[in-house]
Length: 138
Image 1 (cartoon, rainbow, N blue to C red):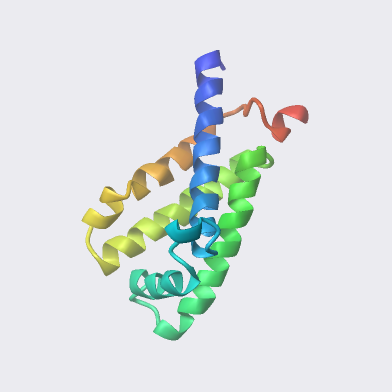
Image 2 (cartoon, rainbow, N blue to C red):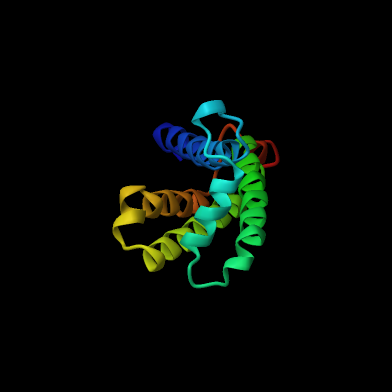
């Protein structure tokens, strides 16, 4: 791969990791007054997943938070990058589809969720991930 592709892959990896970790930080109130908070996130989870019983909102909120932390950290350090990026693509695509179903196509387009998902998918196809733990093993 050429230098521009290496830089682009690195920046996409860091941007995806930052997106996941920032969202988790907000729901855990780590951004201070700029945080959404846990209860607001559980309420939002119920609204986005309007097609499942509302009593599952807390479970979905916990599972999605755990998955986002794991994917975010794997992407940040560049470990198992192809798998983490593919997982990020699938998770964010499911989120975009849930938003589309529960609201309209406008919501995931306005928040660039499809772009986030496809960026993760593209990252998962790169054969080399420079400046990562993965690169130490190849």
